[in-house]
Amino acid sequence: MTTSFNQTLSAIDALHAEDPRSTTLADGTSMPQELAYAQRMSGWLDRVHDAPDEVLRLAVRAQHLQRWLVPREEYPEGRVGYLTWRRDQGKRAGETTARLMRDAGFQGEEAERAATIIGKKGLGRDPDVQALEDCACLVFLENYFADFSRKIEHDHMVRIVQMTWRKMSPRAHELALTLPMSDASAALVKEALGAE
Image (tube, rainbow, N blue to C red; front, side, top):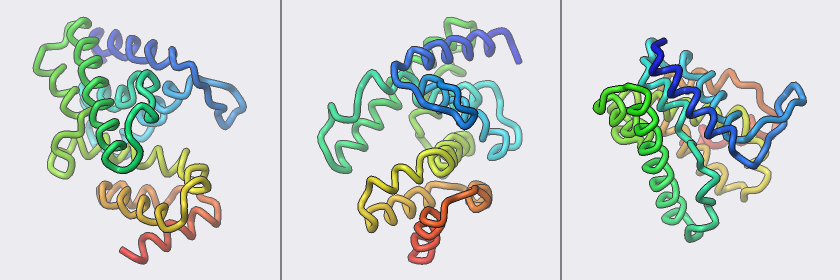
């Protein structure tokens, strides 16, 4: 990896580490929530993409950059509010990442490419954007799905699983089906996929 990559990655992780929220990891240690999420994203990348370059690696690491600064509650309830919040978060994270990359010596087009990937422009057509989305879906299924499904009404949760599945590549589908899940989570996935 280049010096520019390492400098940008350190800057991204330093911002992740500012997250005031924390999460407990499997080994019992505590970590800022966003830093844990970013590390999980990076952990999936080599499994969903054959040869991720530095730009894609940075985009995947920065997908939720400083997301805590603009809470979901500041937007209207419902799907439109959620999608607007998510779009605005992606734009802000992309702009911040691009700035960090330029500061570290990346060319302007590389920085803009990272912002495009983070903004998920070209999902389903752009393999790098698809890789980021696959990582996000797998991180959700592996780490957040069980708790999330206990808070959401059953039929709505089935639709969420179906929407998540539609955004994933065939390779990510295969990986998702190998994840360890509770009986309740596995039943929910089976029901969602059976109704597809």
